[in-house]
Length: 511
Image 1 (cartoon, rainbow, N blue to C red):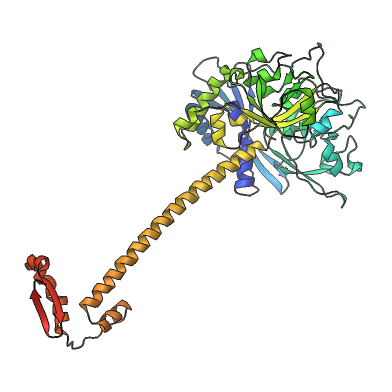
Image 2 (cartoon, rainbow, N blue to C red; image 1 turned 90 degrees about the vertical axis):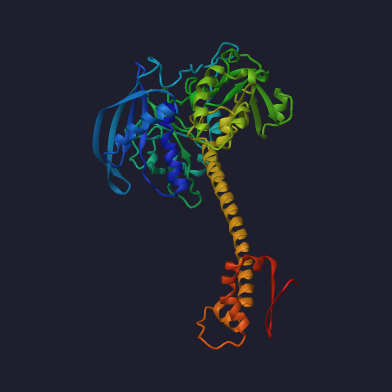
């Protein structure tokens, strides 16, 4: 449940920016898991007194989606005036305490040891400052005072060198478009689960403007400069303010790159990202496990060895998790959520039973050591249907990964396609009905011309008023007014007799 709540901010961002294309300020949610198994939820909103609705919705979601009963109490509520880009703004901060009332002791999130897999020679593998800028070409690292510490290789090409000096305030380089907060340490902590949109200030005409989309994660303190943030979409080799070089520790890397894999010269596992550690069976996560025992290589069509990877280093690599490598303990938890959500979708139950193993799509990068490859990848999923088939949940995809937007955009596209299909079907029905009406109209007009003089029928069809006048074709008048009453009284006349009208009068006969 904590993953669901932490991902609401990114969903609100997508709805506001992509669906409605409006610069709306939606609510924000941030969760803290307590040691006793309870959950503290921080709720921020620019609209007051809506927290009772949040409380009721959360209780119902827990019951319907997560199959658990919870109790929610409000432990704090404050209302503050904050500064925004548009001036003064209002913000309500409500703190909820969420307790599970069933399955006592069960936590809201499954804890999986973020195992920092060691190298085979016993040393701990580190991504060097030389590797990091190329691996994450659009990342930014800032310190406690929101001053620049490090930037990615591509950002170094876009930003003026005079602004790339360590210690430059980040607000001198970028403007914060979203969320609508002042850029400081406390506000970043409060909106840590949201999507941050930074726009490069127009400095020099020779440097184009870029709008990176990111999320902010904790980075372990490695120097005396204090805690730092990493902005997941970029990276660089600038020194720290105290003169030391900032390093990403083995504890940071699995969380920063939850779907990365590091393999050695013999294509054996060295390290895996945090999400992969939840997906792969622990028996296969041991350092030295051949990577082909965990994955099959779908693309490119080569044997997986060091030389072939070097030859195809610029290609896209697609790996698929082997069935025996799938972690069954997590599958049971995910299947509960997947089966519940699938009931709300239009997918057939037969299709959902045809589960497929998760695919990963990414690139291979040779590390500075020259002995290890780092596979930077993300789930190869493009729709909610594929999420269901791979037994994956949305929270498992990082905030900065564009796969999230792809899934949501495709879901919108599928909804539009379904709507268009219904419109086409309705149009076909309308065309068919219009064609039938045209035929009936032609029959009516033909009958009208048979029953009345042509001049009178034409006037009536044109909507004109017909003045009373003397008619000489009495048989037609007789037919119009007298004949229906005769048919009612003597049905055999309509069934057994035929009528022919001539200038001499009306004749009856059998043909």
